[in-house]
Image (cartoon, rainbow over all chains, first blue to last red; front, side):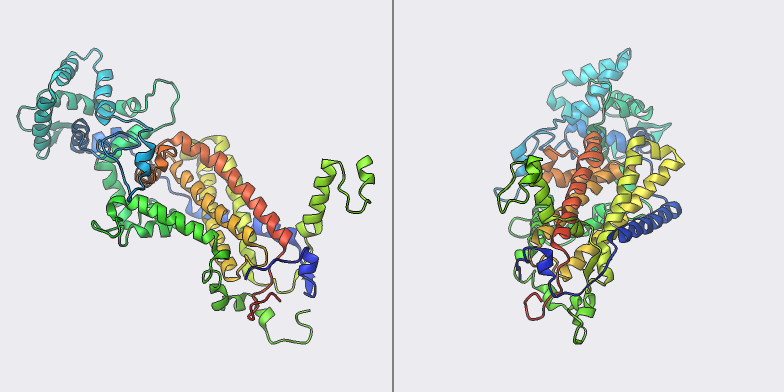
Length: 328
Length: 214
């Protein structure tokens, strides 16, 4: 199938009838035509721009979810709390047999959710707030057993919490300093302070939103908005965009694997299942991309174009019944 | 001038590196191949247009992207003109991928890699891959709700494969830098190489039903 062409184009095309062609005109017409099309679509359809969710919006719109998430961060029970590399050592991450790249590269973006998302922002907010300062001291001086008991009781109470004037109200119980801490964290968040506190990195400029995005990702508010906007993975997630706009439709094959066996199965096969779907699908897509690049060298794949006569439509003039001089 | 005198010499290579480079260009990519005014008679299908319209869409992606990057990532959220340029960028990208996929399938069914053109095909696949990555970092750089959600979800895929340790989709600065600088430069350079290879080799002949290359 792969045959070298002649040493020069002149040799390669020897005997082939050549016709006039204007490459520059074709390129200019293409640029003008595509430009007109793009300008028209842009002017008529605009582009998607649903504003970002802030931690302030989350805390104002769904204070119970916010406080439940913050309590979960203290307990280490959130997604980030048990994530593993590259954020922390709470787990090994995904693996497939001996292939465990998440573990191999280790903790390169260290995040301690309890400290980063709750304790440190409260410490900054406790300046001149003696009640909060006392509550923080009580929390930090409490044993881990005591902290767990407070968290268990408080988390259970949050299941039946109500909202009053933007504050979260739970039934009376032994929650230690947690209600004071959470009320202050909620207040800071509702005022917009936590949006800033989570991107503080000791420098004036910053462009890294890892912490606030992880924190919001642990909650249910942003996920709920994404669900109602049909952005979630079970609905082919990454291909979608807000509104009726096209998303990254070229990721259809990548996204499709999440919908099919073994990547949507708890049990799976040969060690591949929903639990390590990300790793399995990235490996699969890498192999498929390499295969696509190597199509010229792969029997059957490189022969399909010969078997399926689409080329006869493309070159129908060439394949038309021969006339004496048609091809020379 | 001394180097010029050696041009007429039989097969002897000139001493001048500059002259050697020029002669190599003349030999492998003469101007009548780079800018041809004739082509084989069988190049008549609209399928051949998919390549040039892909390049045209890429030109508009780059032009609109340069305007957006010059004005900064906040601009298009607050300005009607900015929103228009973002829309132009957005739809140019959609057209770019649409045409590129048509071009890819067209070349597949024409077996465009035949007769010494495998490298052209392989570079095309790499261009497609880098373009996907460039668009992905673009969606992450939008600074809106979609980019937040994409980042939160995509991190699991990146982390699961170990890539997230170096390619942090939650880090706007890293994604934006890659999107406006390194990745577009990579795509553009590879597209230039792809086009030069196409022009060097010329358009492949139709598939011979007998298995040869007539």
